[in-house]
Amino acid sequence: MVSVVTGGPTDATDNEAAAVGRAARTAARAIRAELSAKSVFSAVIGLGVHHFHQHVWPKHPGTPDRYDWHRVDEWPDAPRAIGDELDTICDRLRPYFT
Image (cartoon, rainbow, N blue to C red; front, side, top):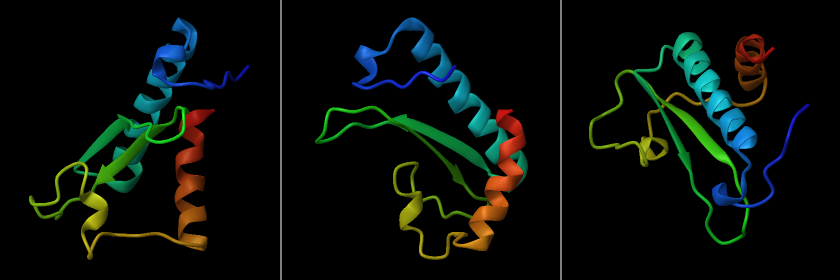
C-alpha cells in the first residue's frame, strides 16, 4: 500500500518518513547507476503551499563546479531529456522501484 504524506515533513508518520527515505535512496541509486551521475542530491523544499515532496536530481560528470547542488539546473549545457528520451529514462529507472 502506498501512503501519501499530505502535509509537511513534520506531518509524516514514522512509516511514511521511512518510506520516503527508502524511495529517495532507491531513486538516487537508480539515477547514479543508469545515468552515470557524478553525485545525486536530495532535498525536501516546501515553499508557499503546505505540502510535501522529495526532490532527487543528478549532478552529471563535467558539471562546472560553480553549479552547486541547488544550481545544477542552471547549467546551460546540462544533459536534458524530453519526450521519448524522458520516457526511455523512466523505463530504465522503473525496475529499481518494483
